[in-house]
Length: 114
Image (cartoon, rainbow, N blue to C red):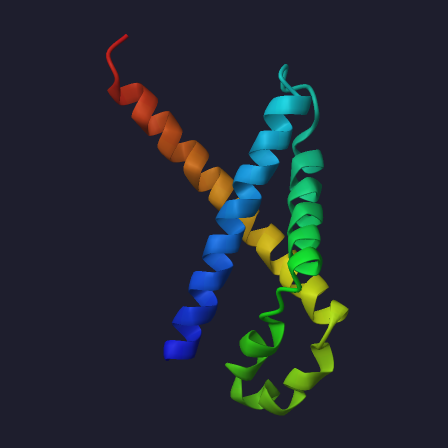
């Protein structure tokens, strides 16, 4: 169970970094909010892959090892393939965290006096 929480903490931390990285890009490049939403979803996947390949982060083997039926297959995704898969997972999580943080920001705005 400790392995699960270690993997989850790693994915959460990296996903939040990707979320803020994409938000930074969005604030720089799209001040008028003119780009469609799918552009930023794709950017999250791209930034996630760039982080994982650049820093050589690979938790895919750890994720696969958590599933008993797949545990013996975990070595198939070593190297760049595992890093890319990890980046895709992190990019997907980043989309979730963007929506969550956006909703929390909206709630916080409503609570402030005008």
